[in-house]
Length: 372
Image (cartoon, one colour):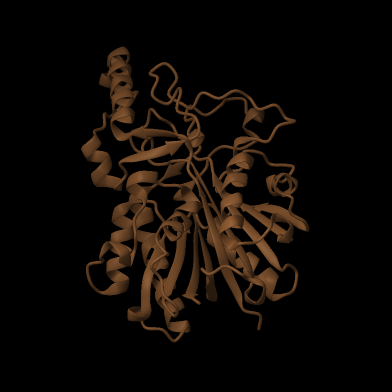
């Protein structure tokens, strides 16, 4: 069997930052204005009162303190409350392509390879800014890669599922060097008037170079030891909108592309994720004590701490399962790769880790890594 390694990683961080206070200030101003203008309907029970928020509430509920965004203008404007964007010239790359390219350049440089070595590109994201043509195919000539590319989406498990696709392609001889890139342009999907979701997401892009061990030249290689995937349908995390919306006689009042039943997700998805990770570790003939680090999906601090404690059988220390939520917020499928990119340099030869994502579907993707 061909040995496959991750030989380089990259991270693109957008230029703008939005604090919790900025979101809270505009949301609370909106809630006060809305409730004042609809006093009668709220009193009659025909409209629900808009709830206010606080910095303390956000940090306790999510662990998020700030987030990076591609377009800050408009998000904190009471009269706009969404990213203000200019429609792209169709002859120019959209934001997600540009984000992907920047992360890819870093990963290529860190791997010591050239873009021309890449013969397969997988662009994975929880939201696609453009349905077609494939954005991976647009990234390909910008970088100067060869071969072929395609886009894919498994919501918040897209990054790990894409890595597994890359691993399988190399194992079968379909590719030699694969770029997996995950541009998550998440902020346009939010309803910034909704206390339950306005805080959640940030924009980011990650990239990994995955290749045969025999061709890798990087001094920082992680062998892919094993992979696991599972899906189980649930619509407790979902998008209620699509390209067919304009065909309906009545448009939905809710303009948010992100909907979640948070308590149900916590109760149902976490056992699926922790059981998958436990089985995955056992399949490797490893003990949990053999695992130096878990780079887990970054959606909510309480979910991460619960999962890490259950798996380890003790209170986790920071480096057991590093959190990047405070700075980056929920970055959908890219979160676990952000954690990997920022927290793997201290690994020594033989050290083992688990990269895992879990999210809408439900879906869980799990990858065992060993530092060479």
